[in-house]
Length: 290
Length: 256
Image 1 (cartoon, each protein chain N blue to C red):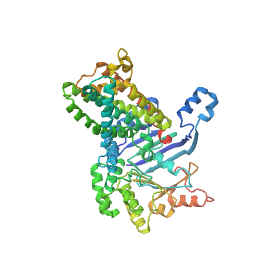
Image 2: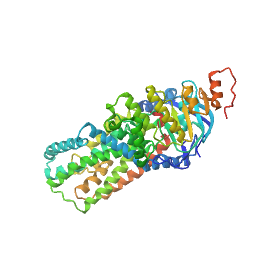
Image 3: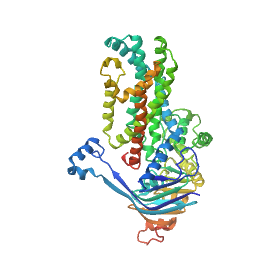
Image 4: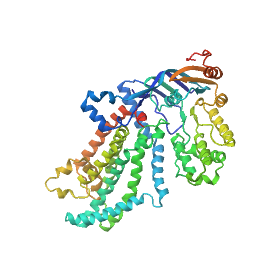
């Protein structure tokens, strides 16, 4: 029951396309065609999601001169106040706690904002979806890309932190690149899953909000893992912890543990399979849910 | 070559109300089992039934029929927005739907930014967009207004810009859903001329409209839809007269 195509519809050129939509193709062709038409074609149409996400950011600059840097400012204040209080609370020296908090909280901000936005990824684009056939992954990538640009704004906070508290970059800092990459892959599949479910079931959005809030407190972002004492397992069974760890540790000049890499990569693979399975099931219906 | 080939196409549009759009209700329905089964099954609207339709290079097809006859659904099936519930839909060539000229228009963005965004959504390359700007400036006569946010525009200015952007594309299969017939007389004349150019650049046109005079000027064929059925398809005058005078028997079979 999926649209079949010989050549993926070209979204960025005027080359002729041959497009066949069947009402009941076999499961095998459904999967192959979903991957090529809804997923791969969407990644290839980067000018489309690129400009959509970029315009979302421009929109914030239109309304205020400093645009998304407001988020940078508020994040900065949040970290500062929380850092001072919590360092006393946990009896940790502020010199080590503030960089720890900053490195973790910035990436958490990216993940939580993307998850939050994913609820309306398709609903927001409803007018476009009902009018022109574009790969669904375009709307997902727009959300992740938009929030990635915001991450580039908030990461600025790291620079004064690193200078003031003398966190010197070393070879381990390079782990930041695969770390961010893996976080992005995980956010892409997660955004896809939430976007599909919350388009179908409109009450998912408040659930997502609650889970995000819970995640922020349950994950060692605002508190150190060492505060758990012997029950470190509480952090280790939390998948968010590993995503934070592979991006936080490199910034602090520490190599992330192998365990975190394995969990993050495993989730990336498993989640992508789940996301593709959901698109295969839903791609013929999403337009009717809007 | 461009072509549209519909074989036995049916489209059922599911209607979801608040109950079906709730996860809690869906889960509840599942645990309680049979009791909620009937309310859980959603209603569907039979928007198209067993439609066989073909169009090739040079065909300019007018879609006629009463409101709710399936004209817009047919256009959405050809543009692959709606998947068929039965049958096959095969299109050859780049499909360019024009259902709502304000698609992708952002009121806070400037005219030029809007050209860039909408053009990209329509599948134009950066170079194509850049080359189209002069034509849009000429057509809209907006000049430096293009550099300021379009929320400051008057309704007429906005209309011109939206129409200008919507008509810069290079379509092979152009699908239009009732977008003409707006604005003052002077603009209408100009807009119509621009639309004619766009139609000439396309290989196949399908347009849904209730304005017979517009359809006569643009089209050489017509397809009459009624309650989701293709009643007649053929030369425009004969189909139009059959549609307007239901007592006369159809002169062309539905599978022209």
